[in-house]
Image (cartoon, rainbow, N blue to C red; front, side, top):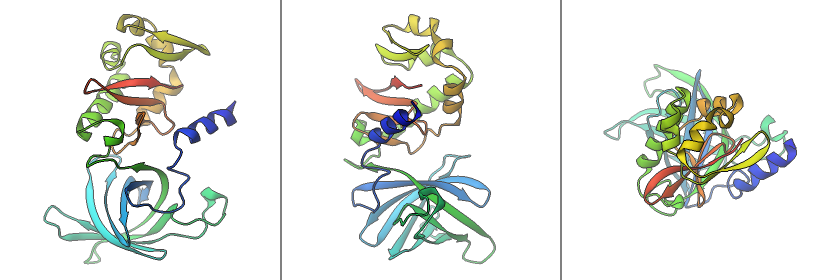
Length: 251
């Protein structure tokens, strides 16, 4: 059963994690640590030029950078609001990594040192490729039919917060109906908000509650079917009549 679930997830992510090289028109998302902080970083590669942003999971605020890739070496200059370099990621792509059973890899892992130009602060960093998003417009979530990334992330944050405080009515208001959910190993189609509220405790059991609580509603994976909230496809957000709605809840 576990193997089947993994295969389904990989199929959902086809064309992203499995890619072993950077492609123009894609955003490559990495997750890892900078010193003692968890971060996520998004790379856009055009030839040897790199641009993008990173953020601390604690604050969800994008920090821009620009840089270069030369072979297995990557240097990213972190920029302030005026475009001044305030820090540097001096890294490389290792040939082997334990996450890939020490098999030869290309760009799946980045590791190195982050430092201030004046030498006042130095930290080690390590990042692992999580997924990639194919860009179809100016916005990250254009592929899923959204014109404004903020609309999607605001909806995702509202949903996450409502689940955490168990505001059943708020959660139900963010769902698109009808929606299919798993309850006691059976697929149930819920057609209206009132029925969703009645079944709420059975839908959001402890495992899925914990996954949603740990989810990051920022720079999420997206494809034509929707935007994914949660590392394992627990929640999908779709564009319904111009609004961001929950279209799938997977347990």
